[in-house]
Length: 379
Image 1: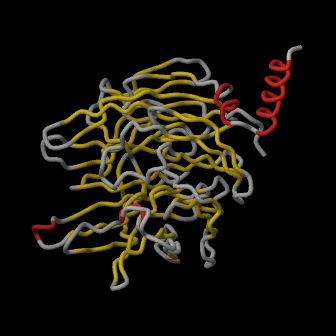
Image 2: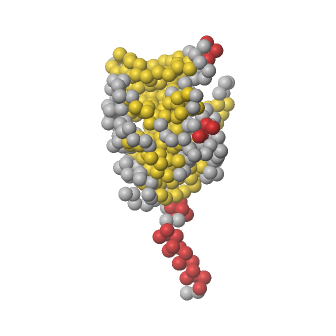
């Protein structure tokens, strides 16, 4: 064997042992699932995908590959959620004439459609794990009318209608809309968690709120400000731009100030920094022992709130929940969006987003939905 061949074999063996990113990329086993996708949501059991196209709402069985049209609807916004029993699916629609928004619910057993909530703007919603309750954030008022109010509301679902709605928390502002959005249930159904930002003489303070479904026990998770604000635009410094609840309902991981943080739900302890990366997106492994996160390949901060994501290169990383183990997996040249992981080593995400301009706004005309395999044994 020549000296060059021996050197090549040595380098190849070293790369495999060291966990080189190239080896992970070669074995990532990507598969294109669908094109022209405006948004998607993976079922809690990881067996089905519901995705939106210009033709309507579609369902795909990952076991059989069978695809079916659930509802021939349009103007569906990229916000949706399942109930944990896989029966109910909720999504948001926009009235293109009035610009008002509504939350719709479909029963996946018979594809029946229910219209639940209508508001000037819906800033987040979530079905309870058992599908019996809906929590949502609605906006009222307009700036030119004097003030804007956002309220976190919860209501029971009966006969395809919301009954006994109750406001759990609200924020009101006169200059700009309140920064109250993105509500989620913990998987055990014990808490609702939402994103907010307070304003005081000390500046803007990003935070996550934790509250019980009966409106009691409100706690705030407030990260420490970064030591320097020079390397990040203001929106990145003062925003919790990604966050995820662990499958056991005990922890929250979130991205803030160029770091990844971990905190315990229901604890008054301060969040702990577990890694120094700007995580554009975060999701937990199914066993709750590790995380996947997306970082910009250009080392750029997250996009400003309300701006359109661009197809810049993104890196996919794996991280143990204590932050002690880390692996770079691969780079996706056209971006990684809506990252989801439900079972095994299979992950799903959108890439190559195609935007189109409407009358008063831009909307996602389509993208590519991919399935990939995280290419190494997980703890």
